Image (cartoon, rainbow, N blue to C red; front, side, top):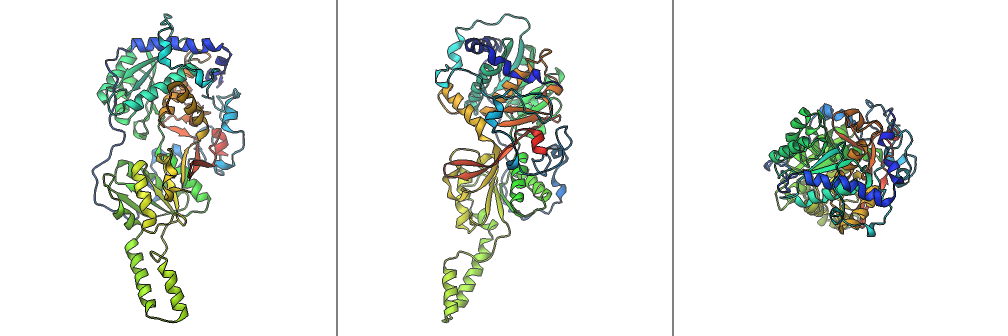
Length: 529
């Protein structure tokens, strides 16, 4: 497969006024033909089942807990990438040992043979020649750009929530998509915007309108229920869907999801921890669908690395106090009682050895080692902060137990809680995203939310496929090109089963932010060597 149709770099040759105005020519028409009533949103972001009192002990499932659909995301680990794909070979070392230039350097060079496995994927980095401070918001340019009249326009639809519970996120993702139109769209590319109305039914209606308008690809919806609802209509019309959900169950049958999969993050961090000698693992997770998903993935990843999952502790995600769960995880009552008994035995003795031992015990909270070397805390936000503060209180010492996290740790200010400092979590490399955040802030005057990169990458992907050498190509073969793409969160590729595979870095929590301690791979073949 040649890769010239995937390579957007010839767009760089246009004078910058044309490079900016021509893509907007089509974008404005998309906004005019959408026929949306109001901009709305879908269902809530995370479904949880009713809390229970169950405090669960080590799970006694076999390594078969790694489900069959997970095989394309090889649970041993996210690195190496799956041997069933053309770019794979044999397992090797962690991503930190990968050779090659830094991501920002590789991305600025037009790739050679980018359609072939192992070659640098097409870059989605900024191609605008104007500095961010001189860039004007998209809205300010609309009135000066006439609508396109050509009959061979390539239409792609963006389905986002723009009112309702997630309206703020939906608007930010639209902003990011507009930046991608500026950066990558050809003069015959038109981005239609449609509202999901905040419900699966609204998403279906939006998809029907988009398909009726001639959309060749649907970008979105945001969440799983809406994505599942639109898939049937899109499949019937032979229109691919690139959604933003992180629910693997919605993928397949022409529906692809760009969302960050918890299983991929778990595989990466467990692989890295095992490579550093960790063998005994524990997990503290919410008693919810998300929590069970995390525990299942964690159990399989630990078993695949030859480790032992010694303890599983769930907690009520709706609780205001997590002391009971943390205390149980720490086996604090028994360890504290052992300490008090030892003190009592020594208090009646007056010899020097006993007195020195008593002084040592006075400095301790408990006696007895914990049965794990690493603890995964599968949460984020205020709950994570509350839980982390309780860990030292119940004598789970972060200096002795390595704290592990999921992608929910990939937020600013994570190091504000001292117990998390030094913890490890897997996330996309921050390099490319940093450039995106600067560009976004330069145009819109504020920082983008974390998920805005998904909308940018999806729109850039659509714009690149629309400019294929032999004409627009939205086929499964083009979408699932083995070399993948280089987006605002590093390399990614869409697999035939509809899931997104990403190159993830391992980050270490610091007081001022995350620090990369194991680099993300720069090509998928490099990761499989």
